[in-house]
Image (cartoon, rainbow, N blue to C red; front, top):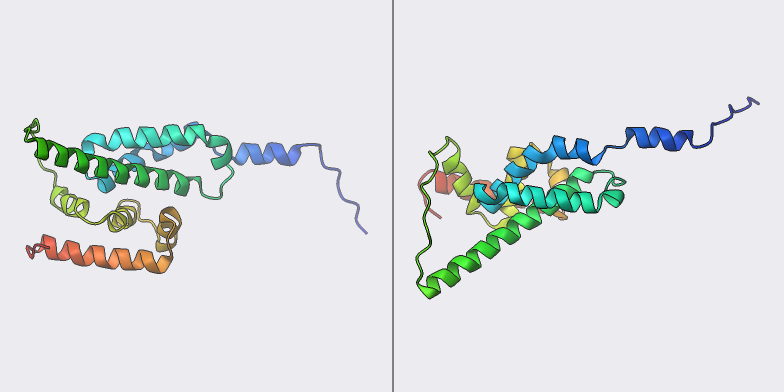
Length: 178
C-alpha cells in the first residue's frame, strides 16, 4: 500500500481560488459581447450600453454566488436578454402612450447605415425568444445547447426558434414582407 502524500491545509482551496475568474476579468472579457447582444435583442443601439452595464452591475451584486456556477456567462447572458426584452416592451408602451397623447416624439438624425443594419433591423422585429436565439447564435456563435441554457428552454425549442426566425428573416430580407 502506498502512503498518500500529506496535503497542505487549504492547498486545494487556494488552487481553486487561483483558477476562479475575477469579476474584473469577466467584465473585460464579456462587455463588448454583452453590448452587441443587448443591441440585437432590444433593437436599440442607444440603450445597449446601458443594458450591458446594468447587467454587469447585477453580476457584481451577485458575484459571490454566480462565480461558483459552471457557466457564469450563461447567467450574465440571461440577465442581458431579460433586460433587453424588458427595455423593448417599456419603449413600446411609451411609444403607444405618446401616440395616444398625440405628442410628437423628438427625432435625432440617424447614424449612417452600416452594412448589417438591414439584417439587424429585421432581427429586431422578430418575437423575443426568436430574436434572442438568433442573436446568440450569430453574434456569439453559440451552440443550441448553450442557447437553451441561457434562455432556460429545451434544445428542441431553440431549434424551432432558430428555424422560424430564419424563415421570417428570409421572407423579410428577400422583399416578401411578413
